[in-house]
Amino acid sequence: MEGIRMQRIRLLPERVINKIAAGEVVQRPAHVVKELLDNSIDAEAKTIKVHIQKGGLQAIIVEDDGIGMSEIDARLCFERHATSKISSEEDLGRIKTMGFRGEALAAIAQVSLVTLETRMKGSDIGTKVVVKGGHFIKQEPCYCPEGTRILVEDLFFNYPARKKAMGTSKTEQAHVVEIFKRVAIAQPEINFHLHVDNEPLYALKGTTLPRRITQIFGEKAAKNWIRVEEIADKIKIRGYILREGRISPAWHQFVVNGRPVRDDTLHSVVSTHFKNKTGRTPSYVIFIDLPPEWVDVNVHPAKELVQFADLLLVRQVLDSAVRKAIAGAFNGMELNFDAPSFITSAINKLKQPRAVNPSVKPLAPTPQEASQSSNTQGDIPAREEKTTLFKEPEEPRILIVNGKYAVSQLKSGIAIIDLNNAYRRVAFDSIVRAIEDGLNIKQHQLFHKIIELPPQHRQHIDEMIEILSKSGFSIQRLGPDTIAVSAMPIFLQHVDLEYLFSKVLSALQNKAFMRDSQSIASLLAEEAVYRGREDRRTAEQLLAQLFQSPNPHKTPSGKPIIKLIEFSELEKFFKKS
Image (cartoon, rainbow, N blue to C red; front, side):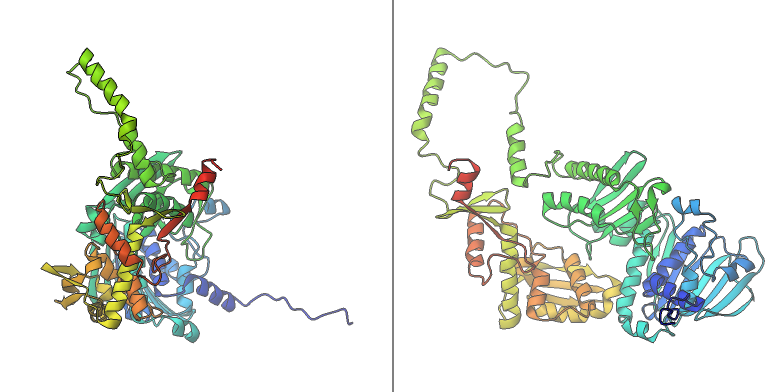
């Protein structure tokens, strides 16, 4: 009997299976909101209203004016894998709805108290269902508007470890707001409302995609969007990339067949092209529409990721769309994204023909002119010794290339310095000294700049003002979400203040963010923008400050500042050795 062992593998009880499923689908209040929004969209709702209390940990309400449910469906919707959206295995390959697994309500009801009220269109009376912790409590007739209203209370009441792991109510609120905005952008034709702790935060009327983006991000951003559009091989790309400035946090959103998703591979396509032109990470909203059988949406519990049947094809179409959009937006030239921008600029200038007046025919040179021309040509070798590549006759210390780089000769080679990265390093050092030693780096403004901040960050505005005051800002709070800026650090004169302040507020919401001088200075300095352009003297002053830094080779975030090229490397490259 020694060879016989007790059975170790057993089937899990249904209740344990349900808890595992709940843990996959519902990880925080924002996931509850996302699942309920998906259901409302599938119910053909024209208006969806979301209410949250204490970041959604205390209560979440999602109500819509959709088709509603019958008495039987209202009970069945709480069963696992009960769905009206698929009926066969083949349906999994052509899913067109937002929700489809039939897990959402069952999983939510496992970890909270759920009250559902629903009435079908044309019915005189609705039905009410109550489920707590996965246990059916009651079902009864009720009077309610057409559509569906779901109240989720006391989230994770029966999962104390999960509840303890949640962030503060403000942190969870921020996650809910982000999910809400992403869904609202993905479905611009629907009216969306969001109330936080009984205060209205968003009231978005159904509209077009450009207008919905404006509703979410404001009129200022609306003036700087680059349109992206391409149709090829049944794949339609449409959307917008922000030409100047950024949205906090830098907003990257793909919408695949109406579903907000993340995709690092596709993000690299947009980001690489944009960075090669501007040096910045772009904010964008891009829709990808393709046949439903070409994409698998059943690869992530929360449906945040998808898998394309032919990712290479999707990438190629997106690549073409982004290339054309950026080329059209920046100087109208087709850019070579594989070459450094200053080389591309030089080559393009060489290719441009000289302007010629077509109404004037060139005349044959007179003998005297021909003689003068010949003499001039013969003088070139003699004059070459006095000719310089620089505008000023004295020997320069640096050459400015494309307004971005300083090139200087060293004893052993050439140094290429990224002026913007150098500027950020100098800005970082100055802000650190301002915070630690009280160094005055303020630049007062002739007119105060009035800025409206995102309402979801309201509780951190006073802390932000206190921190930034030590960094060289003079800020006064005018209202719940409004501030006035009368002075700022010299190195931050050209930054997008709305984005910068939103970035600081987002950081303050993160428990892991250190409030020390290095962290604050790094956060601010990474937004510094060098505007010296072709001014060699300004660049020389900047470099003089750079080489006083304890670390002149890298920015606070670790980006390189100086590229050294040895003469021996050049000799080897040009095959002179």
